[in-house]
Length: 115
Length: 110
Picture 1: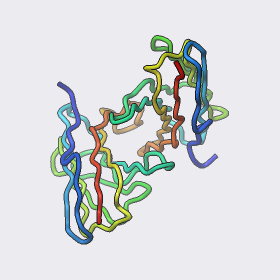
Picture 2: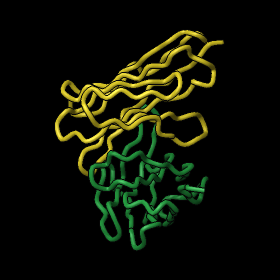
Picture 3: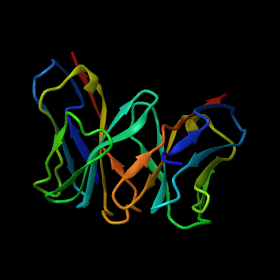
Picture 4: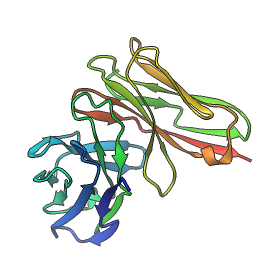
């Protein structure tokens, strides 16, 4: 089954404790992206990747890191989480990395709470 | 327009009525306009991706139009049903970015 898988789905952590949210897709998609969703603000792009070893900042990259060592995986790293990173996070992928005319396929979301 | 804007923010519609809402987007560096349906506790799912001015797409009772010259798209739902209750997101993509609007939350009253 074609899917985007995120883990963990739910996490409560404390300020400063490094964490990684994994994202994996099995559709051989070139483009992958991370979004955060906050009430009233819609989906805001954190980082994206056009292909292996190619990553770039989105609109809200502060406090996050990513890597794209393999085509299927695109982990989101919070080196020192802070309470303002409490949010719902979505990973998404798309076949089309050039014109981005291809639809995005979303993971199920990861709800992160930083105390 | 610098951002993707959707209106209205929320909408309450009687079951059986038809409705529509709007997405405005920057017309420069435009590649595609996406519509997604996002049900509570689920992930957004793609409805349509449109690229050409004048594009019209239809899926069952839901259809969408695109005007790239003036930078807007309409989503129409004919004969609303309770299962249409969701947030509808539009997104505009350029060469490397996909920017989302904040969505229209649709509630259908039985």
